[in-house]
Every structure is written in structure tokens, then in C-alpha cells.
View 1 (tube, rainbow, N blue to C red):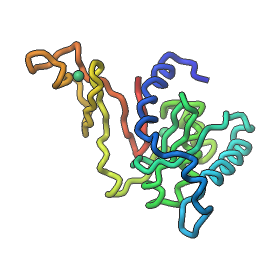
View 2 (view 1 turned 90 degrees about the vertical axis):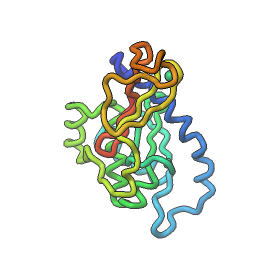
View 3 (view 1 turned 30 degrees about the vertical axis):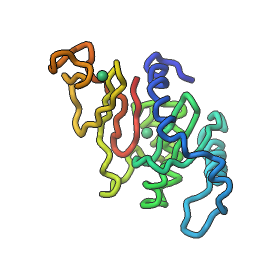
Amino acid sequence: MLTSRKQQLAVRALNYDLFENAQIGISKQAILPKEQAGALPSTETLEHLFNRFNFLYFDGKLSHPVIEYSNRMTCAGSYTPVKNLIKISRKYHNIFPDEIEDTLKHEMIHIIHFNHNAAFKAEANRIGASLKAKTHPSLRRQPKYLYVCPSCGLEYPRKKKVRMSSCGDCSRRGRFDPDFKLKLAKSFAAGREISYA
Ligand SMILES: [Zn+2]
Ligand SMILES: [Zn+2]
């Protein structure tokens, strides 16, 4: 399914995100009581939903991903191809609980279309999933862009896109050094997380 070189490169970039969320285990959630009033649906329920949407909209052809909650993510959801993993944000859906089916549908499209391109939009239209997540003041702390030094891996969260910036630690003589030009690793466009190679 990962056909283009761009997608294959993107897969590598996504690895990082998994470490970030490694402490959120599925086993933990399995011990919790199911479906308390006002609580978010269990991951088991999300899997049932996935199967329903898969059958309804995709002829059951999507490969079954791991679906888990993220306690840290401030965007609505994300999809990580290398692990076939859909993450659903608790923070976001505690604020917008009615959006959870929409988020799941959105992330399901990412199984076949990595970026929010025209093909993605056509699918979103077809199955009634939205492109943009909602915003709320408490979700706005996240920077819009995350840049990374290609050499030492230091992260540079930025509110705006940067073009000619290099790593402060690696650059020689304290000025712009093209050998250590920062690379865009992630953007958080419209409340959705996209990762880059
Ligand atoms: Zn560096
Ligand atoms: Zn998306």
C-alpha cells in the first residue's frame, strides 16, 4: 500500500512518534471498566466501529489497525503506517466527544492516503469525514511545526515555517550552516498531525 517513495520516507519519520507514546499500553485500558457514563468509548468499541465503517465504506478492504488512545496528543488523531496504528486523542475527545466517529473515519482514510491530498479529500467527501478538526483554547499550546536537526536530532518546535535555519548546537561559528539545516518533521495543520521524512 505504501507505493510512492515519499510515503516510504514518511514511514521512517513516523517511528519517533511511537516512542513518544510508548507508555500508553493497550493492556492498561483492558483493565478499566467498560463504557462508564460520560467516558470515551473503549478501544474495543472503537474496533467495532472500525469494522462497521470498513464494511460500510471500504468493502471491508482496509487492513485492520491497532487502535489506541493517546493521553498526550492535542490534535484529534493520527495514523502511523509503519505500525498500522490509529491513535485517538483523549484530550481532544474529552472536549469534543461527539467527534470521535468522525476522527476515526478521517484516520481510516489515512490507511490508503497518507497526506491530505486531493485523493484524500475525495474519500473524505465520499464517506462523510471532515478534513479539519475543531479548535479549543486548551488545545492550542502545540506549535504548528516541528523541525529536527538532521545530525543530532534536536527538536525545534516553531509557530511559523522556517526556511534558512540550522541547528544551534551543530552549526559552526554560530551562524547558518547548510550542513545542519533544520528539517520539517511534523506539522499540525488544522488540528491533524502530519509527519514528514
Ligand atoms: Zn544538531
Ligand atoms: Zn489527517
